[in-house]
Image (cartoon, rainbow, N blue to C red):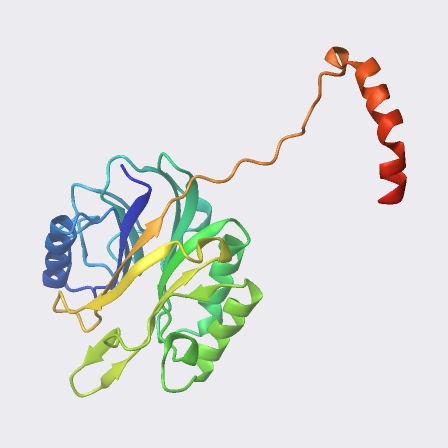
Length: 254
């Protein structure tokens, strides 16, 4: 595979038809990784994604991750898995990174989910997709509300960056309730410039819209090595003569 993976992020509102629609879209667009909130789960499998590797807590899961590309190695970070947050370490040929999906259930305090994310963010997380159920100017809401401000504090604490683009369709739209931006893509500073083609499309019957983007899985730069010299091969006579002839120049330039 190439050094770029296609990631899809979507809140399915637990609708099975929306889940099947998303699966069809992901297959057609050759998505590699899917970050889900409120997935439609039946008999322990996400509808439409039954044949793919998936991480969640079962039929009542609030968050899930689906790995569609068989070339991606995945490690389930079981210690961080809750009803509303899941995290996996994925490895391509380029590198391994941690990816998170999280659903901030509206009927529970925002701080519940923030505290679930903190121990994960203490590690080398690169990308997180979340329905934060909060408004913030950071992700282009007209104004911030209290729930959004709590997430803003998390963003500041971990020097995160929001990928959401101004001028796109809102990420949530329900007739009679209006539209808003509550679905957020967050990245760490190491991913700045490595996330492209972030977009919002209306591909399913869910009241949330589908987010998709490309993430560059660049090979980490090697640590600089120590320079060593073969002093046993040095021509010390020649070097001594050079220093004697140029010592005046060295002193003058000091």
